[in-house]
Each structure stands twice: as C-alpha cells, then as structure tokens.
Length: 299
Image 1 (cartoon, rainbow, N blue to C red):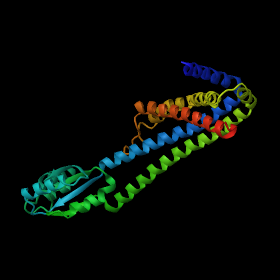
Image 2 (image 1 turned 180 degrees about the horizontal axis):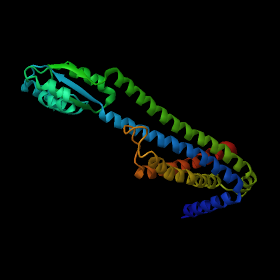
Image 3 (image 1 turned 180 degrees about the vertical axis):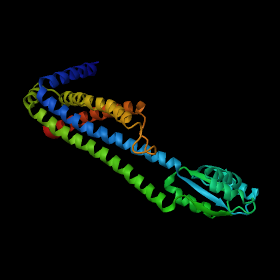
Image 4 (image 1 turned 30 degrees about the horizontal axis):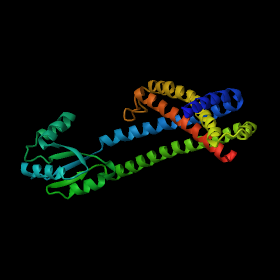
C-alpha cells in the first residue's frame, strides 16, 4: 500500500514537473517528436520492403522438365522424391498435353505450329512447378532435383534469382539497422536533453537528499517524467503515421510504379505502427531519464 501511494505521488510529481519546467520539457518533447517521425518513416519503409520481398518470393518457382520418355510411374516416383525434400512447400504437375493447350491459347502462330504436331512428335515435356519454403535455399533445392531420375532440366532463373535474394537480404538488414540506429540516436538525444532538465533541478535533488529521501524515491519521478515526455512526444508521430500513410496509400492507389510493388493496406498496419511508435516513445523517455539520472547525478 505504501509503495502504491509513493507511485501515485511520483506520477503526480512527474506531471507537475513537466508543467513547471515547461520550456525544458518542450525541448525534450520536440526532440522525441522529430526523431520518432524519422523512426516512423523508417519503420513504414522497412515493413513495406519486407512485404514487397515476400510477395516476390511467393512467385519464385522451380520449373522441372522431365525426359520425353517419362512414364506415369516415373512421374509418381518424382512426386515421392519431392515429398522427401524438406524445403519443398508444394508442387503442381503439368502434363505436356496441358502445356500444349496453354501455349496454343497464347497466340495464333503457336496454335498453328503446335496443331501440326502429334503427341509423339511434340518436343514439349511434362513439367512440375515447385514452390520452396525458403527461397535462400532455392539453388540447393534445384541442384537436388536435377539429380533425380528422369529429370532432364531444372530452371528457376539461376544467377538473376540468386542476385535478387542477396539484394533482398541486404535491404532487410539495412532497414533493420536504420531503425535500430535511429532509436539509439533518439535515446542519446533524450539523455542529453533530460540532462539539462536535471542539471537545472540540482537544488531540488539536494533538498530531497537532505531530508533523507532514498535513491529510489529520487529516481522514480524522473523516470516517470521521462515516460510522460515520451508519450507526449509520440502524439505528433502517431498522427503523422496514421493520416500520412493513409494519404500516401490512396495517392499511389496502393502500389508504387507497378502492380508488382504493392503497399501494405493501411488497416490495421497504420494502427500497429502507431502502437509501436508510442511504445518506443515511452521506453526511450524512460531509458533516457534513467540513464541521465544515474550517469549525471551519480545517485
């Protein structure tokens, strides 16, 4: 009960301190707001890059061509071999007759040429379209499939896909690094801003020490004050994230440059991002205050 009363008093004192030291509090809030807006942009960009990467990865398939003399038993054997490869998510079997019909529908020229070939004369092959679970292992999976009996060729884009996967991994790591770096910069700025606030209140701290206040009692209001500053500083970034992304999404009609680069739908994405921003703001304010009190007041 005593701890609860002390916590309530600390919260009350924290709000009073924010109002009483309005100019310094405003500097802290402004610092948090600016950096959180940048963090918000980085988070939105990061999630959209990941979404775009996943959409591209979904379309990556391995096309497996069987020998012309492959029988139905050979096809069943290949299917059973696929089931033993852990990285294969699913596969679709397309017999050469079906391939022929699809090609004939694509153009009149192909229709004329293919219609003149009997099933025995046709150079087309039975194929499998294979989707993998982990695209980073697609080359290894393709190599395993190529060694199977009655498999004549395996195509998946080879060098281009490998380069694309490497580029996607680099983009992911870069966006993660940018977000983490911005958060660390925010903490650094908050520590230095709150340091000014605490330095201006050294007399208040000295009086609290003289009357026998413990380190915990002295630090708690500052930590709560940091949380309050973080919360207040996250309001503008939340508004920016919610309405800014919605406007951006509508302006570009949900995609950038082409239908391939689809943006994440605003709901519930923008609300989830807003919650992340609020949490980061509160944690950054709290960590910044705690670090400033510990480092600069030597409590």
